[in-house]
Image (cartoon, rainbow, N blue to C red; front, side, top):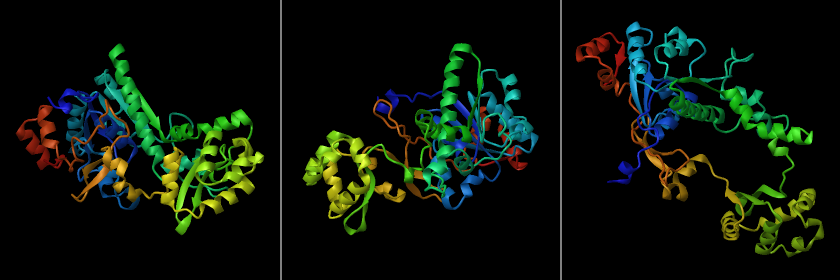
Length: 398
């Protein structure tokens, strides 16, 4: 028996029907799918518009829709809603991330489905949890600005969004966590539940450390580029050839190791630099000395030295360079995925192992309606009925 057969994924047997697009909702489904759930993506005729995004959104669809099946339905037609309801009747989880009221107008809102299927777990991905802001339209950038993350990321007076869709992705992850918690609760109560995850509240969770810093000290946290670090050496250094590397020395023991490894005997013997707090206070004159001293080394030499001594360091890496990262490739952290144009690229897998195994890709990102006919047959449609739905443009795909 193979390892794959011997170790079923934890969510095998769970069926998810998702009405999602863009990033937040699809992330939830991706996590559940990667962990073994059967995730059925309900797309409009012509397919999810996410498939056609350019620029920063060009990779959204293949990244967040692997391990899913696709059924294309026109939910503006009653026959399309009827087909969706048949799919929902077979589901453990429904997930959606449309604007407030859209699912209700379609006849697929939580209250109706809860009455029909009391065991159903219904996951909503929204901009805000219920309250004064819930009517607002939210985007990742909107909540980063109003939730303090852009302030903390940018320089003083220059708020800057984080360089990835952090709230969309984490919001989807919390939706998946909520879905799994509700499924576990259902085992005890026999009842489903509504789960809500939201961009704004997710962002506040991310900046909670800075809120609590203020609560503990009475002093507002400074934006990260202007902060006073808790550690004396915790910076990006420009070194030989103009290359850059991040280096950190975060304890008194590491300071001794660092100084010995790089010939800094004078600094090691200086009583003004005896402890980490002393070194933090001395940064204005100590850091120029370190920068000058280390500038004679290449990034490779510094990386080798820091790694040999067990000191924290990091090259300054651009995202496209990660395709060739030796660790990711050696550990199976990247897997082949079909792109929108049919080409193949490597995609990062979920960052966890189960019994030493990375949950991989069982199904490539689906073509529009790739599983429409098979899924309709499964929920009781005859071939003649399926043909009529196709002819009337209620469905699309294979």
